[in-house]
Length: 299
Image 1 (cartoon, rainbow, N blue to C red):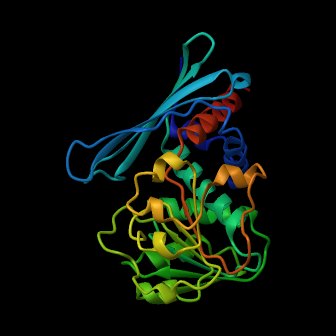
Image 2 (image 1 turned 120 degrees about the vertical axis):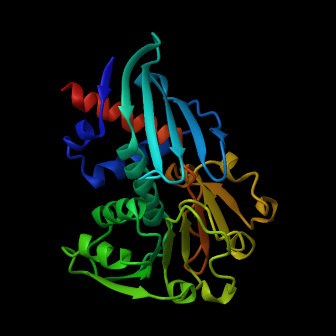
């Protein structure tokens, strides 16, 4: 059994574009994998432990389970570990620190979702929550978007906006703006990404602020429940993740993102559709990333 640390994984210098490719590959095998619902336990308040198992399709001979926790007061608050097994023998292959996997697969899923579902001429991107998840999303997005001039709006919070801009200063095609209100962030944005883990109230209640053709990607689902009622199409990484949502039965249309990537349904019917994409997180991505990392470190 091999112990693999975040430092070991970072030493591989895995490109962001590779992460997006792994996410696409794993989405496309979703209906061949065994992917039971995650088990979520809540010790107190908003703290949680999520257990996320997955058996990859037989050609990979891999089973894995990730445990991700969020404990208030920890820095960072999220932490992940993963066990990777040889499925045919039950042999434990590796214990992995999985913080990098969680961060990069989450960012890659969001980036692939944007590439797949945004309007073709999208040029205004907005972010709320500018921590590690948003940074990973932006890195992955920049690795796959055509190089063209874009506007990136950031919601002001402490000095995070300035720090975020500094991280991406190498991209001369990105024109950053820091805005002070929720409405200013939403208005005229083609794509809105929320990477906040806590949002007790609705982010923006004005339906008209969400322009026609907008893609909304609330990575942690908070604050946009009202959009479930008036957006034209809702996508998710797994139906089971959203079936319990208050307004699930009132979605105008619903599909899984894997259906689009496999060519079973179109990404868009037109450029005026407002699309909402919930990506709660799949153990499939985590275990597939772990498999790829294990194989790379064997070489």
